[in-house]
Length: 279
Image (tube, rainbow, N blue to C red; front, side, top):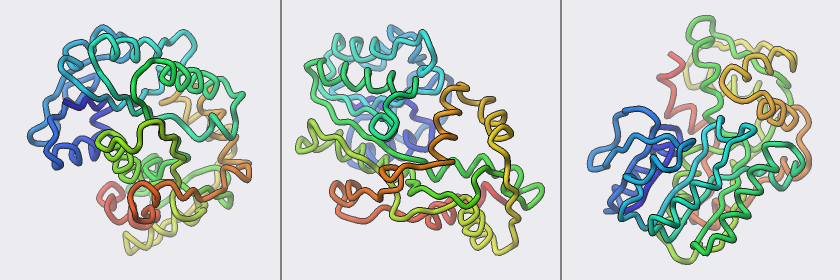
C-alpha cells in the first residue's frame, strides 16, 4: 500500500493515477471528501493532526508527503507526521520539499522545510527528497481573469524561471516510491527552459487561439492576492524568487531526465492539457 497525501491536487492526483496504473494499492488522503481515480482508496485526514492519519497508514509501506500551506506556518509540527508514519510501519517516505532550501536557506519557510528534511533523514526510514522550483500550474491563478477579461495579471513580467509541470513531479515521485535505486536521492526538479510570465501568457493565448493581454502587477498587489491562499511569509519568499532569481534558481536541472529518461515537459504542453481552465 502506498499513501499519497495532497491526493486531489496537481501533483497528488496524477501520482495516484500513475501508481494505480502500475498495479499498486493506493490510498489517497485529502482534508475533505473528494473524487479519486478508479481503484484508489480514499481517506479523509488532516495533516495538522497526525493521529488522524492512522487509518490511512495502516498496512502502508510507503508515503508521499506533500504539505499544505498552513503546515508551513509558525507553530505547525509536520515532523510529527514522519513520526506517525514510522510508528505505523511505513518503510519509505518521499518528501516534496522546495528548491528554496538550497537557494534561499534563511527564509522562515525554508528553514522549517530544511528541518523537516533533516528529521526524515534521521528517522531510520528509507527516503527520497524532491526539490522543485516554480510550478506551471501556478498559472491557474490567472484562469478566471483570462476567461472573463482575456488578461493575465502578474508581477515581474519579464523575469523568468524554469517552472516545472506538476505531472513531471508526480512521475518522479512515482519512480522514487517504486524503485529502490532512488533511496537517499535528493532531486532538484525544473522545467526545460526559463520562461517569463509574459511568455506564459503568450503560450496560453496560442493554445486558446485568441489574444491574451498581459498586465503587470506591483509586488504589493501580488502579495495581497497571494496572501489570500498561502501564508504571508511564504508569499514573500515566493515573490523574492520571482522578482530576483539567483543563478541557482535560473539553472535548468538535469534530474528529471536522470530519473525518467526523458526531458521535462515545456510550459506549452501544460497549457495545452489544461486549456479548458482558461476557456
